[in-house]
Image 1 (cartoon, rainbow, N blue to C red):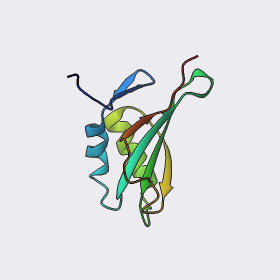
Image 2: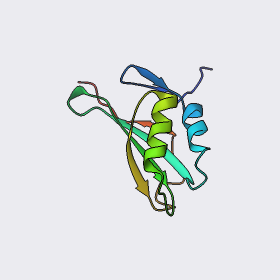
Image 3: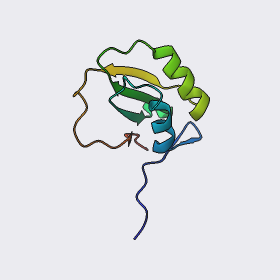
Length: 97
């Protein structure tokens, strides 16, 4: 049996779910999160979606994320319960032509 992993290589950097989890653990207001990776025009884009009732620490989160993971995602704040119940931490939706 092979190992099933949700690690993604984004803009040349490996992004591991446990690294992201360590960043998210610093922000108690974040209930759930997901990273979505796409590549419009062949350029990787990363969106970090978080569920939070009232999140006011966007810059702090983005700074901490970049400090730990070396990438700066686009942040999308969602109402609690918006993400589907069963999600992958890193959803890779890139297409390769």
